[in-house]
Length: 441
Image (cartoon, rainbow, N blue to C red; front, top):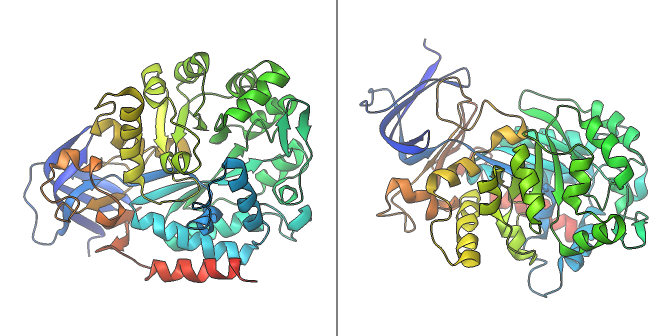
């Protein structure tokens, strides 16, 4: 019996363009061959619509999914939203986080995601006391991704201070105690004991220059070693004002002087950058993760996406706080926000958007993100016959399609979504069951 599985698609994204009549042969979780302009064999599995490589969600806070529909209607600011988020963080335990993350990751799979970068800073018990297993939350996230059928890069975050203003660093508040290991050395020690798995890689994160004091940035960046390293950067003007007032430098300048920047590193949001900040990220080929749905929801602003790309930075996409989980919509927003800011259309081509959608390398999965021989056997088939996509040219589908149009998802050769249904069943019910207890009482 052959251990190959063959698929055939009328349209598939190969390289930077759509090819026709494509046969994809999978063996042991990898693409053995990908061939265009060939008829299907009788035994091939037929895929509908347009086939893309699996998508990469490069910035996730899984527990924020429980905030959807609870923080949007009463105005406020990023900082008042953060208070609500802290309230939720104070309620979670490893078992409840496992249930919530499993459902959130299943929702990502329904949207075509095959790899997730989980920016993880909820580490300890309330008030900072330790669990018997001090990586209990991280292990729960790794297990949740496995159950949902995704690969995960656990970006374990260093978080040492409660904020920064023009007087200096602030103490941790009651909830932030759960986020902190107390020192770079203690964080690095716990990080070194996180177990990897076939579907999981261990990365690192620095929450921000507000949460890791400037004099400790070099040691924290060094402790990350050759792991993927992600940092929230200049999401809010208040962060820039505080670092400029205290240090006479932008957050990017503090980070790059400490050793941050390059193809293994990712600046998340990067919304409020100076021209020199943009040049630094471009020259170093640093990844920048844009999260338009969150940046809109929190009124963060429109980041300099095209300027960063033109400078040489590598753009990726994330759903961050999960006000929506729809990576295709995030890609479309990248272009549409640029249109609003520049008064010009076509700032990003469909090919550029597909590259941003498939930024697995920024998560340490450099063998994913292409429909090509030797790459991981990921794909997402998007229907071209729905009310959103009917009549669409395949090459422009990424500008009109969304998560509801996803039909089939493979991750490492395993079918995770078939005919728009996740292998775990009713993901809406899973989400409801996970979220409701967190707000009870």
